[in-house]
Image (cartoon, rainbow, N blue to C red; front, side, top):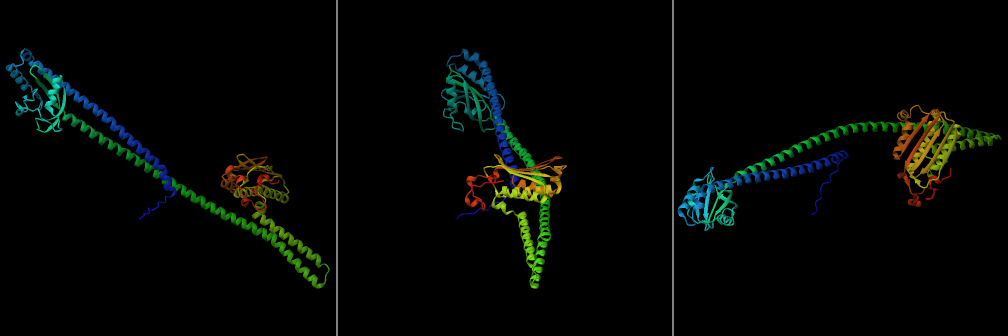
Length: 484
């Protein structure tokens, strides 16, 4: 049976928080693991070195003990023969008396495994221990004898500790008395060394855990700071975004109301008056026809002329709202008609030019560029006092450019103009929607408005299908190739 796990949907803020904190957590975890590993390795090396040094010191001490013991009975051993029982007993007594500390003593075994000297454990004397094994199964006495036959040496083994009776690790130094076939030695228990190193290792573990806790605390504090800062920034940005959204919504409402008012004025001042004139003309013509007046035809002609003017006015308003030539022929002809109408309406000298460029503009880009040109010409008509206007559209290897210039008195401060002026703000926002840029250069000699469109908003003509082309325009007809 397939189980479906619940899908986790994260908000943008949560994703941003994870993106900011996850690398930090991973980096801190990696650093913590590396620090812990290096700390353990360094501590282990130091503890191992200390352990070796302590054991070597004890070995040196044992060697000295054996040397002193041999010096104590060397005058007896050196003058005795292989079967000198009296000399052997005298040496046994000397070694039995040489105890040190709580657990230190000398021991002697002959090469057959018989214990001859064991002052701390007298029950072992005169008994054969050839097969004696320690807790790990090592045959200790055989190792003593084998080491003595080869010369001097060390044997590490387990041995019952005289003070406690419990088996502990012991290091013994073995020296031979070959003429008597004896293996003599003494040992030292190193459980205190092992206990010290074990305590040191435990201390290292505690310190490593403390280091982890410190790093974890610092990381938690850093995450708390990041989270708190992110929350404050998020709240602040959300408030700013809400304020900007309200401003934008209000501006949209204002623009809609302004456009509705303009259309209402156009209809009232233009269409309505023309249609009223046509109605009066038709009514007058009807009365003259009823009266048999020959001037009825002239009245009808005036009515038809007024009706034609009304039709032209409707077309002009429709073109201002959405120019059909922009959809039918493209950006170049649409802007050309816009500039020509602007010149005939205002009496300002106009010039329009375009340069052929290879690619086709996106439909949204065409609309935005047209609206920017429309807004710019409106501002020129209202505020610039210009007598000459030039509009240029061209393409280049990085995209496309539209440039509108006039010879008016310019703007005192373009930055402030971009702030409160709704027209210039709309131009700036349209440029940002295209992912392009809007630049305004103004001086006493005039103003230049330049719009740059990025290459990403350009459509390669080879990717255009006939269905993508606008009505009346083939897929191979490009904006820059349209006649100016």
